[in-house]
Amino acid sequence: MTGEVAARAAKGFTAEYGDRPAGSWAAPGRVNLIGEHTDYNDGFVLPFALPQLTVVAAAPVEERRWTVWSEQSGEQISFDGSALRPGAVPDWGAYVAGVVWALADAGFDVPGARLAIASDVPLGAGLSSSAALESAVLTALVDLGGLELPVDDRPAVAQRAENVYAGAPTGIMDQSASIRCREGHALFLDCRSLAVEQIPFDCAAAGLAVLVIDTRAPHRHVGGEYAARRAACEAAAERLGVPALRDVAFEELDAALARLDDPVVRRRARHVVTENRRVLDTVELLRVDRIREIGPLLTASHASMRNDFEITVPEVDTAVEAALAAGAYGARMTGGGFGGCVLALVDASAADAVAAAVADAYAARGFAAPLSFTVTPGPGATRLD
Ligand code: ADP
Ligand code: MG
Image (cartoon, rainbow, N blue to C red):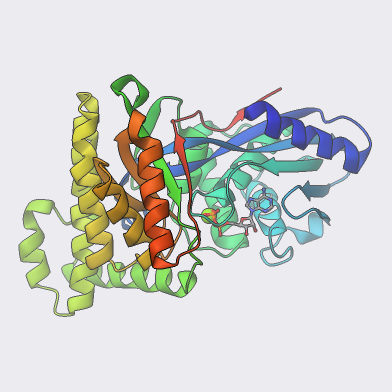
């Protein structure tokens, strides 16, 4: 799979610019095993990198100009140093210009470049094609310019590109996953300290698989709902007198909830505090190789997102219910919500049957057909050649 998407990027480069790239760089999309809406609450997440990659074929140029082609849009855009302020480059180009801007803003002398991009990460499905794009471009520019930016510090730069330049107020998880994940592992990330621990997650060895179901449900009101969830979490933390909901211990949850008068804010806080606990419990099980037993935690996470955080939609709930009815050990929505993907932990031998059961449930309810595939944890951003 890597070879194919890399070949498309290289071919695109030659078609657009008439010569060969100096190299190519890849960064993966991600799926979050557990820990949803915990990142901006200074909490814990446990994503792993997808085998699906975004590849950037690139070559440096003398002047301070960046020319970018993407297979997805089929168009070429170009900007120079004057575009290095948020808002100057719109649409998908903002994710690329944002990386150049964020690097320059961090004091780096960013090399001008021609870039050609191809990707196997589904766009807008909650698998973080945006972070894959930022991370691939960032890794390419850092290498081309010989910039001294330690790997551990790169996610925050890519996140600024997304938050400030592209204007999407996301947490640190996606870029951390795309850059810092390791093959065969899930990334246990403390979103406050940014400390990470690589947790072995070898489903195949246990006869298991993670089935990803792209519900293809249209995203509804995502931006406004996301902002509202963040605001509710901040309100809860403020009322409780803590810097973030991360600081509410699971053991103190009942006492904390009793101090929150607004029932909506109370439910939002309960999701975050219990979700942090579920991440920690999942990590403990994976450490001792009890993978199957994380199933109920995944399903409990989904119930919490549905009932307390209220970020699921009928397509998502249907996929979870159908997967569980077909024998999945656990299933949950993954990603920000209001559509996107569901993941299910299944016996490897049952993956096709579970996918078929979900497709049947969709057909019965008149939903557009979902797209299901199994995934294994791949490596983070890297130079390919
Ligand atoms: P997600 O990150 O879950 O896929 P987002 O809405 O955060 O969804 O990001 C999707 C957007 O990122 C696309 O609409 C597009 O603007 C941009 N994008 C991602 N990958 C590419 C790509 N390969 N080429 C062009 N734009 C891309
Ligand atoms: Mg995104």
